[in-house]
Amino acid sequence: MSIHPLASVSPDATLGIGVTVAAFASIEPGVALGDYCTVASGAVIKTGVRMGCHNEVCEHAVIGGQPQHVARPEAVGEVAIGDHNVFREGVTIHRALKPESQTVVGDHNYLMAAAHLGHDAHLGNHCILANAALVGGHVDIEDRAFISGAVAIHQFCRIGRFSMIGGHARVVQDVPPFMLIDGQTGSVVGLNSVGLRRAGFATEEITALKSAYRVIYRRGLTWSEVLEALRVEFPSGLAAHLYTFLAGGRRGFVQERRGPPSTAATLRLRVADDDTKRGPRAKAG
Image 1 (cartoon, rainbow, N blue to C red):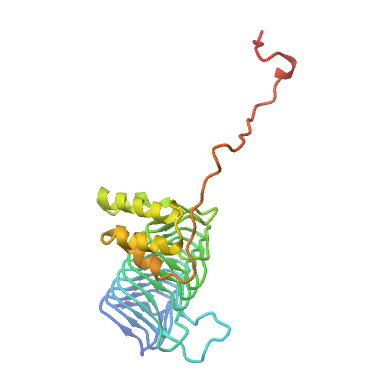
Image 2: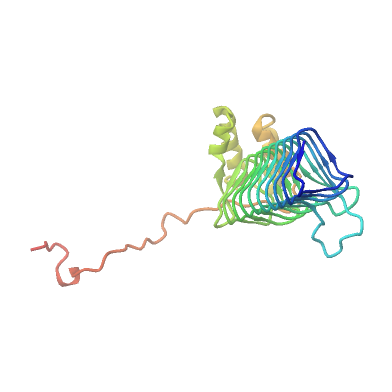
């Protein structure tokens, strides 16, 4: 264990073996850090945080702040963090709103600079939150989701596994698993095919997901018909999770962005020249 003499570590905190705490870091009473965690200069880990092993807390991150809620009770919940997570500079994670509740971070997540995880949020495993990603309270993010920079996710939304949300997107409804969300419109623009291939899924699994995608967005079915078709046509594999996720929705789901009709007018641009003085077949002299 290595604690810099200029660090502030409460004697009521529990630190595992191999923990490193840099100068000007602060660890409050009741904190529990697992083995081989590192806490960089200026980072603050507040009361109510339990953290597993091999986590990295970078400069000026604040883990375990009070929940941002105008009706915050006097006693609040905790933050429970797993193993092998990285919290880069300025990351903030807030405690749950009620004493019996937790804000949860799983294993092997990477939260880039200035990312925020609100109270009672649940972050799965192997997720990435890019710079300044903002996750509201009670948001549930499933495994291996990728949240790009400056994305804002409304409270109580759910983000499905292996989904990817483009930069600056505004998310106010659930994002189905395996989907790619356009940052400009916040709409579905297809499957996260690149992420699925990189994860090593078989071609057959991805093909089934494409078929399920068409059931959801292309067949023109009613919502009850969509759920029934997914349940019957995709009883197993990755596509089966789409039925499980969609059947549990309460906020509605992000819709597909459809392109303009093929008959839409096209504007032709040209560089201004002296062609107005010549016929269309005139040649340069």
